[in-house]
Length: 437
Image (cartoon, one colour):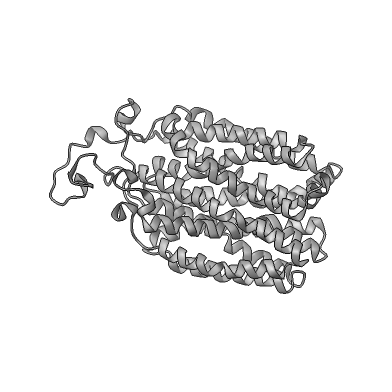
């Protein structure tokens, strides 16, 4: 992996629009004093623990709701379209709050922002079960999802900052933790809810305990500035962002990453939000449907650890994009034609397909030379991608309500695989956004 500082853009340009460090033969200033202070070993160990605990909390707010969606719909009187809107709220919040993450990180530091994100997750998960109406439920869900959103965007930034030479490995670690949290929440929410008397409010609210635990390791990192330039710590000139020499929207790689992120996110949120309902409509019990969603999520646990380092060693990630897409088509085709015939197989296939998420996170870390570039690219690709993914779950719910079945919604999901593959292959080319700006 490229060193975070040796390839960072120099602020003095010797040609219009071109920084000095990119002009061959142009001597640059002495960078010795500007090198980031290396994090102490205990800080890196603390960051790993903080990343793991934060990642575990980035999906239970969503998958626990998917497992209890029928009970929540009945309890709050939601229509199919409103339930589809509810499954799209995560994407909307991720986009809205994700755009604000870089500015917040520049002002307060990424550690402080992620710590605040954990507090927001815990608060939202405590308040959401107390809601007595759909609007209040949506607002309290948005509080938790806002915390998830800023943490989503800043995870690659934290990795690049503290582990610039281990981006693939550390991304794999927290991606595995994210998948584990997703799987556990999907699998145990219904059994634990049944054990607590079948109260869906308790079943959703219990995940706040895990979020409170995640706050603790981030507290010492709130004011930590390891891995940041001394000048930036002193409040002087910060590290130039990748887009200072051109808007990031001019980068084709950045645009393709955003579209790939959005299309794979559409598939993931349809899977997490609607797959249990598809199985229940096919005659499976609520507990088994939740367990199947758990299987889908747990499949990604080992793969999320293996895939990012593998992708980081490859010049182009297009081949992985295609392989994951094949699994996705097969899984959605199974849900379309015979959901009850081989539910375990469909769950496994879609679990493998969901590994597109750690793959795109890895590509974000690889497509920029500098830490500032990763901040810009992560915010743009994730926030824009989540905006792209908003209509999908809503449309799936509406098509199901209009058609009375799941054939038309699943046909739509299979059709969307085509642009997803094209964008993923273009985003996976071995290049950096600085070269395109």
